[in-house]
Image (cartoon, rainbow, N blue to C red; front, side):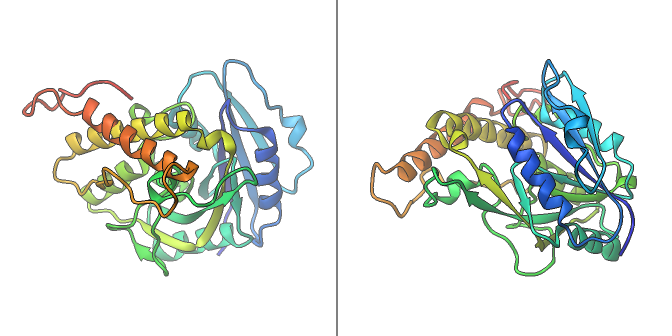
Length: 296
């Protein structure tokens, strides 16, 4: 399957330039035979990335600058600037397999689905303990995947770091569930809205990327902030779509590590912060559709 592909990447203040260069090297080694271009959007008050620094790659790289904070707004702008027939979304920390683009394009073209999600697995840096529980990993990616291409339904979830869509689908992310560094259940909201509208999405596990987890991602403070905001977003999604099947995370996660190890501590922090976020952002009044604390 052919067609031009635009890969959208948003670089926030906390992302490292070396992550982006590594991603671009992986994109340059793809087995896809059609044209590929990359749209990079640099989020911050001042631009840090310049197009002339990215001229040595096999594919053209467009660099945009966005001063307004929020990952969703930046990603929407980058999608609008994309010119390819197919738009794929990746994170700077992604390490896509060599068949990633061709597998995503094949799934989109053959199915006609407005949205395809690929699989994400963790890639641990040397400083990171790989014995992390699903309660922590779920802050970065879904932790269960089908073995073959599957229509999206519970218990499967999309990941906003590995998505593909036709440019004509014009899907957009919700700024209300956005943070500077990551989206908050936006992939869940995309799934639920599509199901409510009678549309469908696919999961293609062969479209695999590995997401690098850095030491900065796995401090207790970073995990607490991520988990609290995820809990808050889940509460808001549950209130706005009360009939939807919103994931329920366990209050306490069992981790196969000795008590008070780092992995145990991070799982405990994630569980407590997620529960606190859901509690803080519950509706103030049961019958009021607008009675939700603005807390994300």
